[in-house]
Image 1 (cartoon, helix red, strand yellow):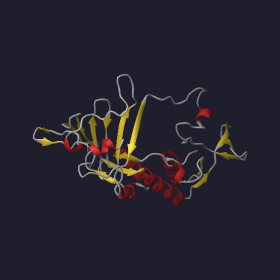
Image 2 (tube, one colour):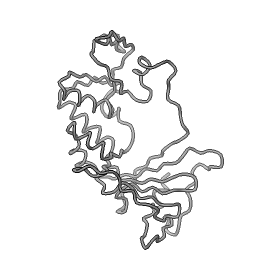
Image 3 (cartoon, one colour):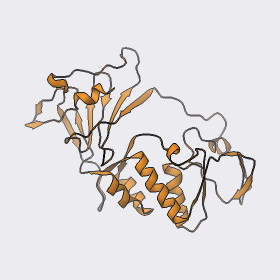
Image 4 (tube, one colour):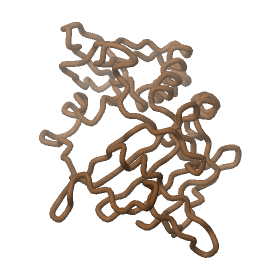
Length: 257
């Protein structure tokens, strides 16, 4: 169940082991089932994508970073470089737009012979020991050796395999995402602390690289929309630290909120 990243990847892997696979996806088509703007693929994710034949295309369409992140303080001073983990043959991280990743995985699914049924869901699952009886939302029935629930945070499958009452709960954090042109210094994640939150521009795709702005949800003493201090020209202030100039986040990125 589910034609997101997890469902598509699992289907490719299962098909590679000789299983016949059918994906049921509640959304009506490929494009409507994609959520989000961009996604970071660390080196272990790239290794997993390589195992299902998708890593090369992700690297071709994405942006491979030579480092993981730079950490700046609120004034733009460089605090730490974060090199990231390494695995021979892969960059430490790749950034890619979610629609591009979704298309790569879907194309690979179709190439391997997996069937995707859009606009489909389930109403009942019954584990019969050696198989699972599946009742679909349209009333039709089918039998499967295995049902994989990869249908998201509001999973329908979850209610049939886990105890009642287990539902996701909002933890008070939110991320605001906005597309901005990639500045030359945004060649990896840049984490900059703010008075009431954090800013994390990152290169999430190659053709039109993207930035992400993340802030905790407003709480006591927090003012929604507060963006911290900016220096002349609308840039956050950057200073030299240890003889090195930090690359502060551009004011235009902050003002985009």
